[in-house]
Length: 129
Image (cartoon, rainbow, N blue to C red; front, side):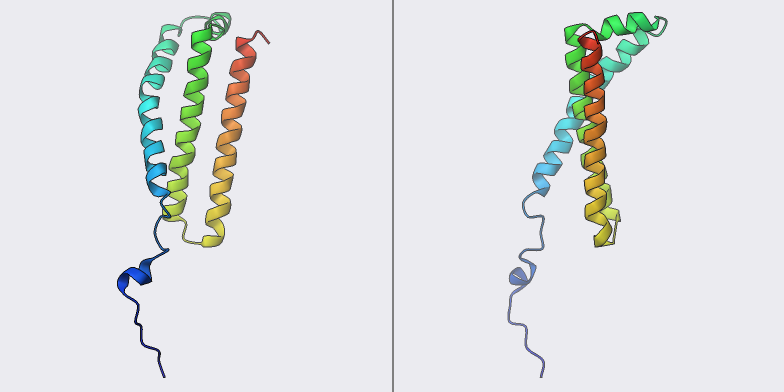
């Protein structure tokens, strides 16, 4: 004999939502996107202004404290925004649950590694290494 469902629609949907993490993820995507607007414009304008310069001039430019700080901020915002965006793509389009979590972990680790390499390189140049 089949058992009758007595739970309401609210009871059946509890625990199936975003676990209250979706809003924070959404906000961080927007915050990093807004931060990337001026940082990317600064970076593009700086590279265009130095397009005819040589390698040494570019290194001298990167050694200035304000440039180094802005470059580190750009790298942090860029790779964090990339990781958040790719996580959403994986969660939305990967239908195999055995692939989702490892793929998200790989994306976050790769984003962290790329950001760390970029920051380490920037600091090495800025500190005269």
